[in-house]
Image (cartoon, rainbow, N blue to C red):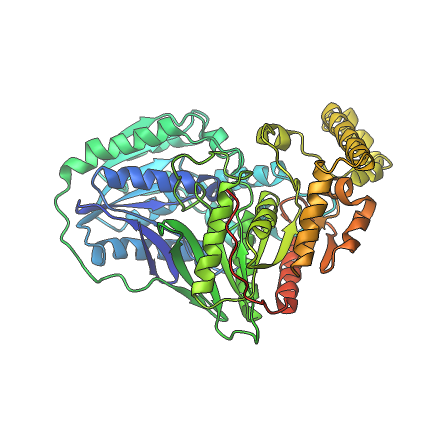
Length: 579
């Protein structure tokens, strides 16, 4: 897997000997976040079958320059795709290309293929056949993946899990109608779609009428794949079918690709205020991260490692790690947003716990990221993470004395014991107890309760569990049982404070993690005052993932201020990471 870039769009080339190249045209927004790891695995499988594969980020998405708020998004995405096709032919040496698109990416690929007579094959996974139908789906998703009631929203845009689609972009999407095209995208076509997918059968019939050989297949478990990045179920059957179709239809027509040494300049994405470089790091140089450096470093600049949250890959929920990194660079500070092993663009490591998030092994990955930053000259290094990423940052700081600071956002568990169930923890996750106390006084709460929209039994059980946990923690402390979770948390905080590690805990005002904090440090986290350099900030109007744009922006401001105030490091020797 080689890092490449073109037109400020980064990508990965999975090399193989065949002279027909496959370009993966990803979905957008929340769907791309869910699919990223499996998209990489599909690319690896196709490359192993003999065809080079290119994955890339469209302008304003993923790690590419730009944002959802830029104008002319659809045209910019098409320009990125055309540049990817040119890259595959001119720099990677492919004689012809196959376009394989997912959702809106399939629609963009079909549009790009209209004027290109040399497309060797076309595969569409649950394609957005009608832009109007796709826009309606986005509107439904924006309501299903709801923000905290009363959270500030951006006027004139459709938001899905914090990814925004502006009115201009939505109008351009609505104009898409693949069935109206006078030309099919290729002579050989595959369409994989769930039975309920709108327009897939009609599109297949249309392209057959235009003279193409069209294979149709079901797409089982698509809904589970797109449910949430952390609970996503890989659609192994559909991915295997796509790979087998390419092997049977495309691979036999491929020849030998000519060697093209030295064609790949150092990949880099740069814009005003920052420059980003993809980095493979770790003992085997197989872990992936993106180093974002300021064009004008601040005096005594700090460097932050931005950890994965859940199974979100290194761009973060709603691309927040990217926007935070670039905002930090504008203030003169560097950042390293990484994928630990088994997430995003970092491969699985044999023998590691597949759960990834709450286990000891990723501590080694963060220690390796610190190694990388130190090798590049950084000496004021801190870690920042949300939820499970905050848990990982905390335990890495305990294991590695080079961590000078911690920003932990909406931390749910300081301690994760063997036997805890991630699925149950997510299913039973609730907002803070204070939130429910406030809500019970509101008429709308009772209306929603009567409509059956509130999981009263689940909330009651979780509240009882929290109360029981707090009582048991207090009892253990009163009896002097030092092995209690609270004692372990306080011992950890004390050790960090003794080393001079600066700590910032950030919670959305309704987040259930506030109760976890109270369990260990008392109501209002009063006990935090005992640890020098530790403080608490509450974000108003946020949710657990910081979906509202205002909450993400405020969190970014807090991290930037934290970086500016981080004291110089004494450059101690590294202590061995926890096993």
